[in-house]
Amino acid sequence: MEQRRYCSPECREATLSERRQRAYRRQRTAALRAYGGEVPACVCCGETITQFLALDHINGGGHQHHRETGGGGFYTWLKRHNYPAGFRVLCHNCNFGRQINGGICPHQER
Image (cartoon, rainbow, N blue to C red; front, side):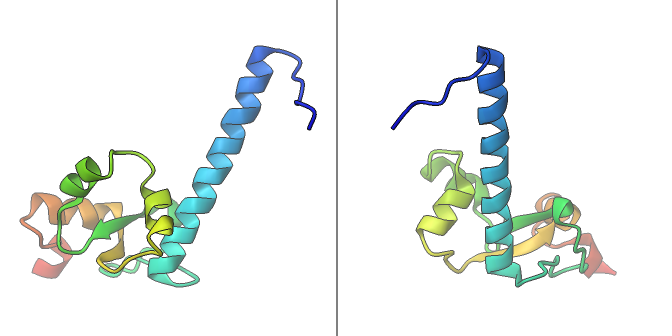
């Protein structure tokens, strides 16, 4: 197979960066759909804008999981493990709210 030629190192890096970003977005979307259905939504507040959504470790332990799996590649890890149970879709606000509020989203306190 012939190696692709680029007009400059900068052009090569820009092309590869764009490919990495597209792959990341595809993996993230697949993971959100695996846990949230065809149109993923926050299970707490119902937010559906994809950029606002995150995957939450239901029973906590996200930092420990991050250390055990070596950090990056979370969406790849989920796919390799057939999207295991223990995760759910939350928006970033609800996810962070749970983190700073002892595991309870501020929406649930109302």
